[in-house]
Image 1: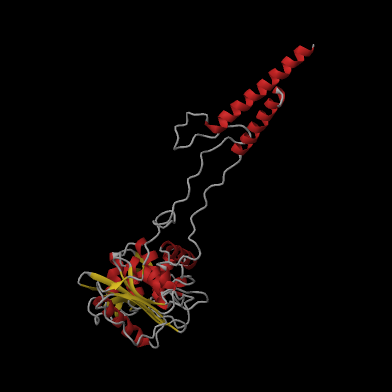
Image 2 (image 1 turned 135 degrees about the vertical axis):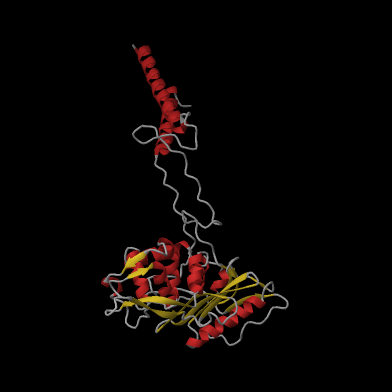
Length: 393
């Protein structure tokens, strides 16, 4: 049986230990990071080969597809109707301009006028597609965007990128936009899609970019434009500025029924790549085909997959989905929330923390009660010692 003094000492030691634990700082909840094994859009999209889940009466997929990667999806619902290696990372060519437009297009009034400086159209990659912009001349923003969408002009991209703060700034913003759209297969190195070491995307990601871009009416207008007049040079004799015609290089536009656009691309590394959107009976489908056997095949296979997608309405189950853009804070809406942080505790120096905004701030809190108990313990122990000394004298 412990003596009164031993009991008091034990109580004080226990209270001191509890007070030390209470005063220890608590780490803030870590930001959400998806598990590394998670496949954006559903695990089936990571499986090799063709993925499709037909119901009774579903038409067969086209049998002569040569694309290294392709995907058919519903732009409204995000349902993936069929796919083939949709997360395979490949050079995107000029289809990366879809992400460029989705990032930069909302920033400038299309009627604004910009005078092009010489440095804005220098340093373009050898063999770049150009719309024909000249230095020291004024261009409306809408003309520049027609140069991007119709002629796939890398010169127009670089002028807009300089207006946006420069090429490095624009690349950074494009990567951030890709991350917000959960396009994890995409690495941006150049804003125009020109072949660069490490620049990659996927059929899945390009479909995400197109789906997002089509929500912007200006984006839809530009990508659906078949031809336009573009400002030319100034005639030195008359002083008058001329113009010339440009035509959309999308070979399906105006030929495939209901085609909205979106963007084609061809480079040495990427081969041919195409993202096409078409509308029929109030339904909009997206098809992306990457690196088929030949240039013309990219259009033939896109058209065949669009035909299949429209014929498959209600006859296939989705094999995945195009995910939605992340909300502010970077957490998917279906992700579990982090555990709430515990209320603040007294600092080791003894000063009490400010009351939590979620609490009423009137109570002492656990730390305060432990401090009072420790003080009482010390006082009681002191009194006990004083009484024992009086009995001894």
